[in-house]
Length: 381
Ligand SMILES: Nc1nc2c(ncn2[C@@H]2O[C@H](COP(=O)(O)OP(=O)(O)OP(=O)(O)O)[C@@H](O)[C@H]2O)c(=O)[nH]1
Ligand SMILES: [Mg+2]
Image 1 (tube, rainbow, N blue to C red):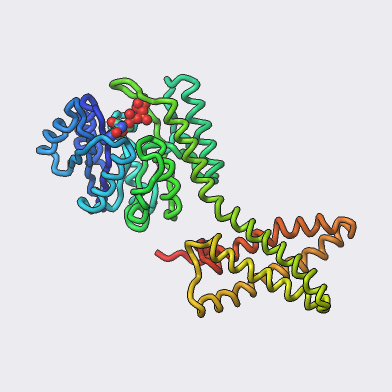
Image 2: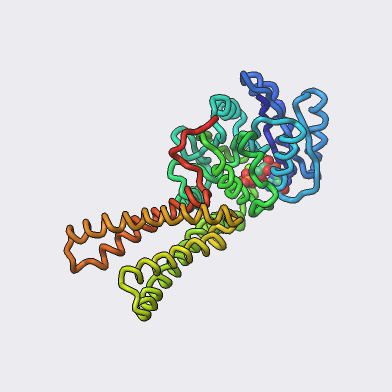
């Protein structure tokens, strides 16, 4: 297994030499079962960081340097990740800072978790045994804490604890190689880490958090700015909105279906169709409307095309819709029996909101348009 640490640097002349030495002379030899590499991504630092790396490269064959224009932290990482995957053949990459805020002693813990089967290893400051710097002023502690809490709730990852850490390992196969690295949000800022985190966790099966003590900058001064925080909140909100879009469309299409249903019952009554047939035909028209709009709009990126496919899926769609009918005709009467006939409207609203809509949404995503992986299916590999 080949593990490449990607270390962006900008004006880290005081830190980079000692960092290289600690990693290669002390930490890498402790790691068994992985071939360790360090890739420094230096954006032509005016203080000569790159030259220091070049000198050390003569001594350490697993040390690499990628130089380029300064485009910001996110691009430095993306360039590094692509290089590590394509040119170095990495099996996993580690994101790590050059300024000793990430103590090199944790590299072995992170790599061990990967070798034990993790797809994504998060160096976490908010699990037992981890910490943020004691010396941080209270407002910086508060900003970090609440920022994390906000991300946890908005991205709905109740099992995880650190969303903004800069110290992580990602498996290449099946995970990083599938992430669209060219279109992350906020690439110039630290906030790109949140988008990268979210997209990565969509592809991972096993995530492990390893505790780390996050250190204060030892050399040079901190550059943390207010703008970074705003960008992070913005990124989290945008991710949430993007994810909610489908649900909103689903709701609107459902509402249109409801209107179609209602209008056509009246129309069919007008033309003296029997009550049963009026309901039957109106319901089928609503089902057709739901199928068509969801296919063209809600699930447009998974659009079903071709007459044969459409017919087949439409039959399935009718079957799942019948399921909703079954749910309603079982739990409707049951609810009415429980709370009384005078609350029929409430029972209907309750059954539709808490059972029929979630059921439909589940069926659409799982069976019809297949945007979700089936969590009950036995995992392969
Ligand atoms: N290549 C490259 N590296 C960068 C750039 N900006 C920051 N870095 C490096 O990325 C790592 C993290 O940046 P820092 O400036 O330490 O950011 P931070 O840890 O959020 O803030 P501090 O409190 O100032 O340490 C360090 O190793 C930097 O040298 C950049 O534009 N290009
Ligand atoms: Mg730093």
